[in-house]
Image (tube, rainbow, N blue to C red; front, side, top):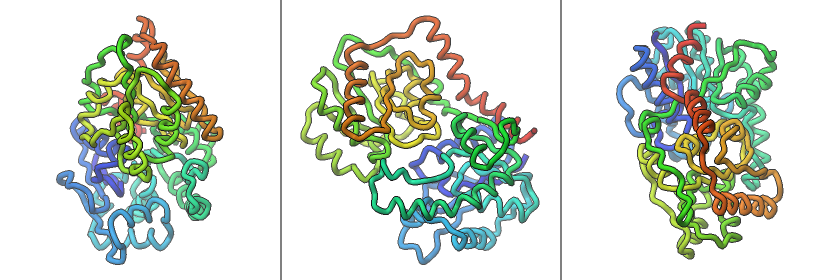
Length: 392
């Protein structure tokens, strides 16, 4: 099998979808022996051979500006520019057995390439559809305008999904949403769930038991933005007066300066330096509680998945696929954030207090159930699933 994988930001350091695409390619190459080339945008660290890179247009003031345009301001003119750029790069879709797109931002281009070469398109959806900016979470004055713009992408996205031979999604939540988005029947075999595989270093990571006799160590791990709820967490933290510390492993975000100021003024909050993802398992395992107060509909929520994998206590919300990830997990505390901020902060503070003051422990039957849960995200499970996706 020879595939062309189309993912715009494949080589970029940040982004869960990009990390999933790289791990998927590695497994498909090493375990199945498939030959997989990549079509992506230039601008990230070199990820090795077999990659066709498209340079951003000369009129773009910078890579990040072009990335924002691709994410939020895509349009027919940009679609045509991408197709011409691929043709100038002399990428030959006809040389492949199929086109594989694990990036919804690239799905229109992937469909154009598949149809031009008369090749089947396979899509792996990692994004909530329809794509919209959550106006309540972002609180940006531009959100209504951007949502009107994004609404115009519904038609080409629906058409590309409908034209895909198979559409896999990273959670049952996304599978239901994509099926509804396209208007497919409930029993349509075109839409399936294919959970993303965890990397080998996560699969083999140690799971030290959660401590119960010392100050609780709480970890926030994610983008420093209102969407991810870091402001909600800091507001809730002020309400607590408990033997606990908060560590923040924050990726870049609009609230970084605010978080830095608060952390500098408090002894119980530490802002951690970024680390390679291979070091994240040990960092999570060094904490007792992982807090993920996301306000937006998560397609899966990698942070919550990783915390459950390492058997940490989790304080989180019921947004998107998060309830699917923590279902039947005995160490989970969840809240509803679809309220005003003051009420949500009160709920979060109470959940944190319960997690800190009344730590739970696994019982034997619960630990056995965790083994069954983890099988969904093992590399070998993914290999079986991806082969079935292309074979059916």
